[in-house]
Image (cartoon, rainbow, N blue to C red; front, side):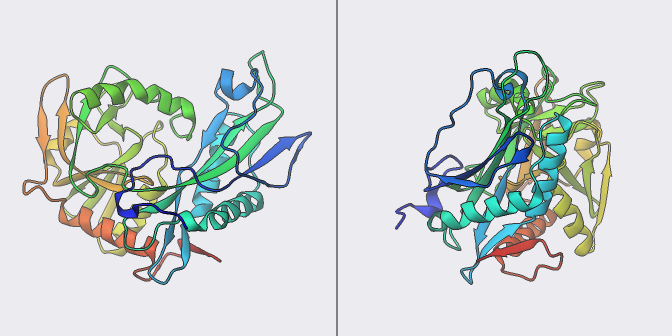
Length: 339
């Protein structure tokens, strides 16, 4: 039996029993391999190390009140990994192999799926990288795909409570027509400097503006941005934003609940007129934002005057969570059961 304080878990790595791997060589994918090893044997000239041929996904498995194990929109993660692979010329993982490995790694580590009601879940990390040898800049001819899992608590230690973020202009996460729409490691490496800067000033995450004019909102660290105004859910449209599966789900959910949704360019100067703002993604689901500070001008935008998340953000968060854990009917067919 796993002895963990489930309700006190951080968002971090905890060793589990197994991970699964498959290899693309000589034009074919291998069968999956189950291993308890945490390390990878990789050639020093692998393209992932030198030329950034690497992409990953973030997913979760949930244990419902009925004890059943649920996956949330796994096909969307597979599609996004396909897009990332094609974007940096890696070999895409076939859908049937992706699901076989996904199901295997979750069930092999079933004892690490947190119990219902603890606020924790099983985080799933699929990883695809170029393991073939290249010294010149060109795509690899061999690839490795693996999936590991780890039980996690809330991404932000505050949980579903307002966080503070800061606008920065001295670094960019991604450029238009670059890799911003792909879930590749280079985007996250580019965000580290901005993240560390705002953390040092007491803020949870950086808000990145567009790389050209610095007028439009792009992303909140590794999450998508959204705002609420006059019963409308507003989220940025940009050629450098990663398409969040959580955000995509929230847009459908908003309309299902009778609100409106808009995906459009969102100017920074609109921040003063929004009723609620937040960040969304797999790790945190929704992080309501209570304060945004422009580190250059010093201007501060405040939300959540009573210290609590806004009503529409709260309704979206609770409804999406209820679907993921099986506390309410899934009207969209988002949930896949594993047994």
